[in-house]
Length: 202
Image (cartoon, rainbow, N blue to C red; front, side, top):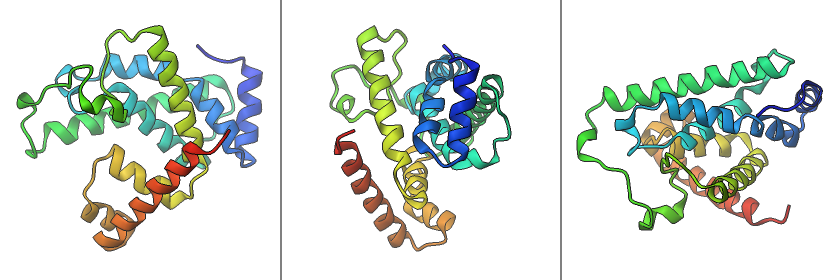
């Protein structure tokens, strides 16, 4: 489902003027569309490692980080830009787990509903989500996106590197030109700040 072209143009203009809220609203419009693309393209063998919602959330993080590079003005241009970004993330996800020998995919299984990890919001794949769970996921995703938008850039980046790309603190330190210990402390501060933002009243 997409929004009227006029709304998209207004939100993009507001986002370019520095409104994180407008950017978050513009991105949220495409969550359902991107989920459908991700579910269609995601290799079933890799769903134990991450769900379509994880990839969409990573795409939103990337879009917030790289929005200054977006040159489009229309709903179609924004949708196309987000779709290309999502497909890049899918390709990276497939490549990372297909070409590395960290763990054997065949020995891993997706967690069953009701397991202890379900409450952590681990982004488990569900082929046919109920309307209520889909609505709840949408609300939670919108709240998370808004909270992330209020974080400093270095906090958003370290969260993305750790939670989405699943890098070690040594790898994160190399990306951020910090020591592994400094990267770990930055991540801890970022998570604590994110928790506060999520608890804050709207």
